[in-house]
Length: 57
Image (cartoon, rainbow, N blue to C red; front, side):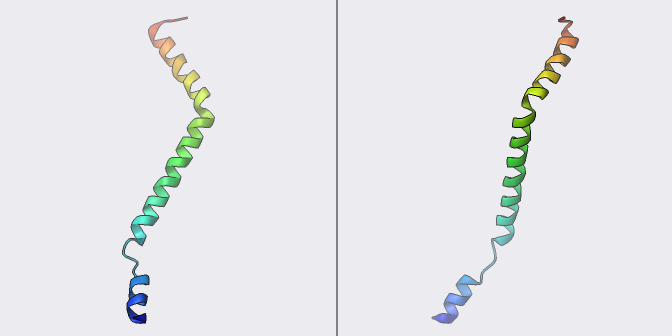
């Protein structure tokens, strides 16, 4: 019984996928945070580009 428990607790088959999932989640969280902080500035930059392309003063 103890051997079966050790075998079951010692499995590491999904560990790599979980680590990749955590890395992807952290990167996504960082992107959302940066876009939240710089959102107003990016909106202004893109609006200036649109205005210059359409000729709007």
